[in-house]
Amino acid sequence: MTHCKLAHINLNAGRSELHDLLELTGAEVSCNTLPAGVSVPFVHAHTRNEEIYLVLNGRGFLFIDGEERPLEQGDCFRIDPQGQRCLRAADDSELRFICIQARAESLEGFTMTDGIVSQSDRKPSWL
Image 1 (cartoon, rainbow, N blue to C red):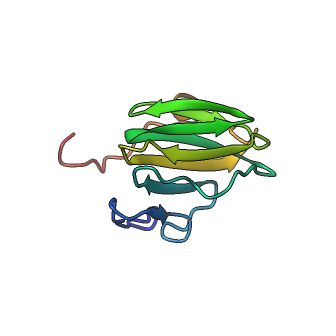
Image 2 (image 1 turned 120 degrees about the horizontal axis):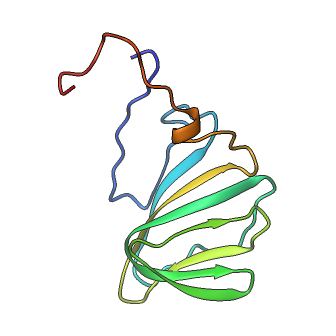
């Protein structure tokens, strides 16, 4: 597998960062769990990276630029680098989420504009 890096993380860990594990070169990805009533211990922003969040499970709150917003499973959001942010789990629910960081304004293509259907005869057994 010369074009792939495969690894495994413990989804029950408090935080797992994937940049070193997968040798990421274009994004940072972390899987995070805040126990009930627990907050990220600081408000922060970034210099160049936007953050994309996907709430996988639970409920909590997003603090963004002085406003507090409720969060629940299925919510997703993007924050500009300059956005002052902090997350907190609800008092009665853990908050499990994925956070992806990538350099703002760097996306030049996505699946429908960057993907190329392979013309190779090598295919998986299910095709």
